[in-house]
Image 1 (tube, rainbow, N blue to C red):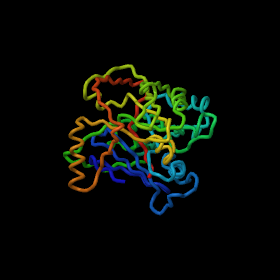
Image 2: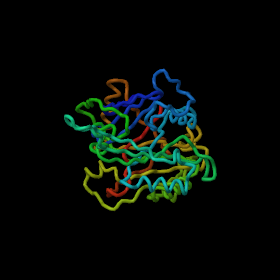
Image 3: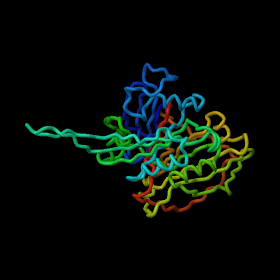
Image 4: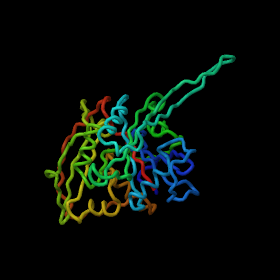
Amino acid sequence: MRVCVCVYACVQYTGPRTRAVLVTSSDPCGVKMVITAAADGVCANDKGGAHPDEPYDHFQGNFVQGFFDAHNDRQSIGVLGFEVARGELETILERYKRLHPKLLISDRIAVYTDTRSIGHGTVAKRTIETGRMSILEVYAYYRQDASSETDTGTVLRFVERDGSFASAPGFANPEGVLPGLRDSDAHFDGTSIPAYSDHWVSNVIDRVGFLSTLQDTIGFVPKVEFNAGVIAAGAARIESTVIGNSSATSAASEAEVLKSQSQVYLPINNALSQQGHVAAFLDQFGQGIQHLASRVQDLVSFVERVNNYRTMTGRGLRFLAIPRSCKRPTQTSQFLFERDSHTMRCCSLLHASR
């Protein structure tokens, strides 16, 4: 897999069964993606369970294989990660235990610490904790409704960071993204364009059920219902609702709106017909995160750079050919994005399996 739109920093982790690489935007507060594959020499369809020599639950090989089993062996996005305020993780865990226990991957919170040994001369050394990251992972969906079995293909990850894990963002502090990642020297060329996470779209079987799960466990609320919930393009018909967190403080400057990650938007679609991109995704991939959207400061310059890069190198992104039936006039609106340090914010982490 090649990422060619901007020059990215690469930070990696190699474990007993998996290898993971962190790629980021040139702004360490921008987009972050962790791309995971089977390690060299490890069969991609290894059915083994958790490896005893793997210290990090989030890099276990059985997670990668479980993803492929649930998505017809197709590459896609496996994890959506959120950062939560201190003390919120226990509350989220208790809500899942009480309301959606089948979605829990484990009934415990994984805790990783950063420690230092200090001492001088004849004084005995002692160990102090300088940072802590706590991680809770749950499955996102049921196969049908809440009475059915769990869909094990997509994971929601909630993290709390403190101390050294929270001291700096992105490639300046890769273990603050996920414990185990190691830093590397990041090089970005002079034309690199920073990108920031905007929204993440799920295609599901039971849209109302997934909305209820998010409301029950993390307090998300519906933000937008498109055309009273129904969108039609030719023979394709879907229902769509945008859900997200609630924040208390407005940020109106252009720079804050561009970079803010405190307001989370999760559009959720289900198909009402056998035609269209949502129905095709569900048929070919199963339920999951269909696409991610990123913000850039100047979209025209971004498109120009992508096209020039592809023309000169033969590599990079190609833009989708959008059917005329999906095109409609655009409207320009002014949005105020909210920020509140005491509410959940998306930590711009997407964990892709390949």
